[in-house]
Structure formats: C-alpha cells, structure tokens
Image 1 (cartoon, rainbow, N blue to C red):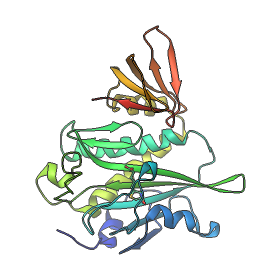
Image 2: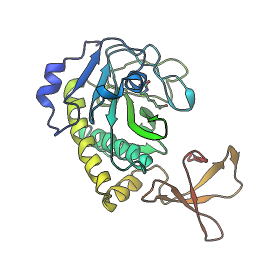
Image 3: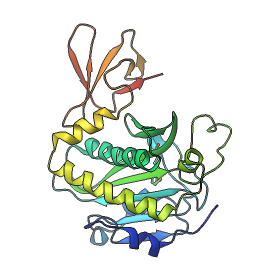
Length: 264
Ligand code: BTN
C-alpha cells in the first residue's frame, strides 16, 4: 500500500534529544542527499532531517542510481556537524548497526547483517543502503550527510533486482507502519551517534560482530584486482580501517575505497 508519510504520527513517536526535530518533508524531491548538500550553511543545524516519499534522482554508491517505489519505503538523509571531523566511516557503520539491530528486533530474529562497507542485508537480500557525503566550504568541513534508503513496504522489484533485493514487509508478511519504524530507528541512530562521539570500544565490537564474513577467511579484491589468497576478516579498527589477516600471519589495513570483499 502506497501512502503519504504522516509527519504527526512520526513526531509523536520520536523520542530523540536532537535528531529529527527539524524535519524537511517533500512528497517528491530530486534526492534528499542532494537537497541537504545544496542547503545554505545558515540553514544547517545538527540533526536536521530530510525525508521524501519519492526521489526522482536518488543516488547510490559508486554513482549508481537508487530507485524505489513511491510512498512505500523510507528515503531520508540526516545532517551532522560533529566536532570530530574524522572517523566518518565508523559513523556510517554505526548507522548500519542501528538498522541491523532495529530489523532483528522488529522481526524477532537474527536475520540482518552489514555487508561491508555500507549495505544492509536481510535474509541474504539487500534491504537498505547508505550514502555518506561531506560538504566543505573551501578547506573547512561544513557538514556530513548520511543518506539512507530502506525498503519497507515494496512488494515487487524489477527483474534485475528480484533475486537480490527485499523489503521489511516481504520478510514480515505484513504492511509496516513507516512512521513508527522510522521514529524508533532515529532513536537508535541518535544513541549510536553518542557512542561514536565518546569513541566507545563497545561500538566497534558490535559493528564487527554484525559484519558478514567477520572472523572468516574470505576473498578480496584490492584496487579491483582479485587476490589469489584468502584473508581473515578481523573487523574494523577505531578509525574505520578494515583489518585483514594474511596467510603469512601479518595484518593488513585497508581503507574502504581500496578493497571489496568477496563473501560468496
Ligand atoms: C547504496 O546502496 O548504493 C546507497 C543508497 C543510498 C540511498 C539513499 S535514499 C536517501 C538518500 N538520498 C539519495 O539520493 N541517496 C540516499
């Protein structure tokens, strides 16, 4: 069932200190990330939130498109202006963890996981993706934008996506209240942000436990070249670099731009 997002239901359920109190809602928009990127600096505040029921030019990672059905899913972006301008990849993964935990609780099963670097997999199919972008004014960091696309009530996917994409509704077998789902998710994201700010080691451990392939020997592509040897995935470090044990017993550290994991 397609419907217009009900902001009053959403705000009633929202229990955050600062995240999502300022909402920019549009029935239709080019892209929530693009909108927040273009917004004038004086209009920006930490926790500003933009949501739309339909993106005409939704963007994914690696310049791919992000397309979802109108009024059935969640497509939104959050503006953050942290004092610490590093470790952003950990923050993206902290949001991924919030989504995974929300899905596991909602579906009462351990069915969701993070596909590194920023996809969320539900029962072996993709249900959400995150696109994190930064805005600089000259050399000065201005804002971080975390854009999330989450398949909630979509029932059918294109032939190309059918075998690799799913929605929460398809897995649960019922229509989901998007407003309540989102409000609870933002509560969780705000909490994860606090853990990130405090550089809590427990956050890194929880992220690692939820990354597909953690502790396993897996294939790796480095700078687009498939490696002959397997590497053991040791998880991310406190800066978000991925640590891999090689066959010689050494630990290699990779930035997320450098490598792709081959987990199946
Ligand atoms: C990916 O899996 O490639 C990331 C997808 C991110 C999609 C979201 S939807 C809301 C926000 N606005 C965009 O244009 N993209 C992100």
